[in-house]
Image (cartoon, rainbow, N blue to C red):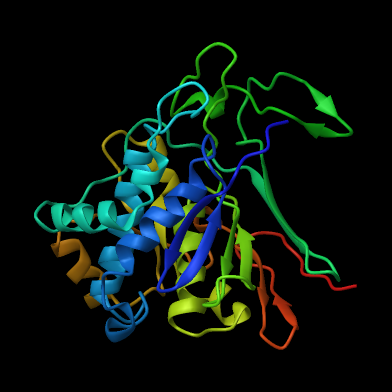
Length: 300
C-alpha cells in the first residue's frame, strides 16, 4: 500500500484533486483543463454545438495523452509534477500547440477496454472514488484476493516498463472537483474505457462550465479516445466521435483543421462510462449511470 498526496490543479477557481502518478489520468485531467480554461468555451458553446470547442477539446485530450505516456513512477524516475500541473506550463504549451498541427493518437500504448469505476459518498461527507482495471487482456498473473484480480498483467506495461520493484503506470483518473471556496466537494467521479480521459473532462466541463446537471451531462454526445478500428488498424489513429455530436458540417470543419475523426454510434461503449456524484450546495447529491455501459446509482 502506498499513500500519496493527490495531484492538484484548478479550473476557473475550482480546485481539482486527481489520482497522482504512477496513475497517469488524474494528472492528465489537470493538464487538459488548465489548457482549456484559457479558451472561451462558454462563448463558443458545448462540443456538439461548436467546431472550436470540439476541436480544442479533442486536441488537448489527445496531445496530453500522448505526452503523458512518458510519465513514470515518481518513486523510480524523476517526474517534475509541479511543473507539469502549473498554469505557466499550460500557457506556454497552448501557445506552442497553436503554431502546430494536431497530434494523432500514439500507435503504442493504446489499451483495450475493461475496467470498472465506483464513487461513494457517505452520510458524513467522506468520499471514495476508485477504478479497478483489468484491461480485458490476457497474461493475468492469477493473483486473486477476496475475488479481486490485483494485477491485470501485461496490458499495464504498454505505456512504460517500470524498473525492478517499481510500479507500472495506470491509465485511470479518479478525481474530486471542489467549489469556488476550495473546501466543499462539488463533483467526484471517474470512468473506465480507452476514452476515459475525454469522458471525465467532458463531464467536468458540462457541469462546471456549462451548468448542466449530471443526468443531462452523461447523456450528452461525446468525443475523444481512439476507436476500436484505430487500435486494430495500423495508420488509422483517428479520434472517436459519436454521430450525434454535432452535424456533418461541424465535423467536416474539425477534420479540415487536420484532426481525423471516426464517427461511431451514439452512446458508444468506447467513450467511457462516467460514474460520478454531483454534490449540491444545499447538501443534496445527484448521480446517474452513464448509458454507454452497465451501471447504477443508488442511495441509502
